[in-house]
Image (cartoon, rainbow, N blue to C red; front, side, top):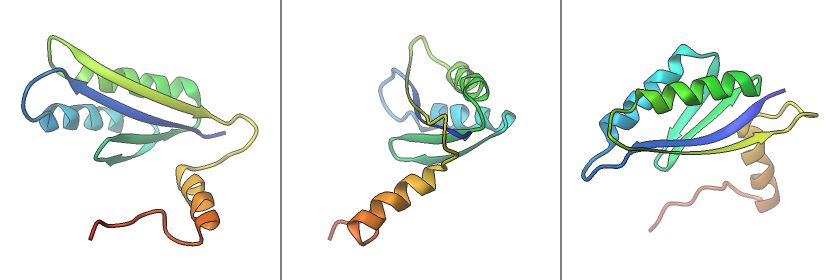
Amino acid sequence: MTVIAMLSVAPVIEGSMSGEVAKAVAALDDFDVSYETNPMGTIIEADGIDELLAAVAAAHKAVDGDRVSTFLKVDDKRTVDQRAADKVSAVEEHLGRSATKDRE
């Protein structure tokens, strides 16, 4: 079983958060998860919910600040082993094209 999650961790500060976000992403390296960071968060894949939640907790704790905001959305599809890329491919199959478009 693969648990897929979208995670966003950020300090509540003015200005750039990229340095602190980098700390959260780096904290994921200590866990048996795969991840891909995008402009709005990080997609994480883990073999189970316990490993996923441990990685999320470490990412949250890695960010410095008086206040830290964390958003987590979990897809725990328990009867099927599905990767995040498989979910995107399924949407693209219905679209008949890539699910990505650049602004012109």
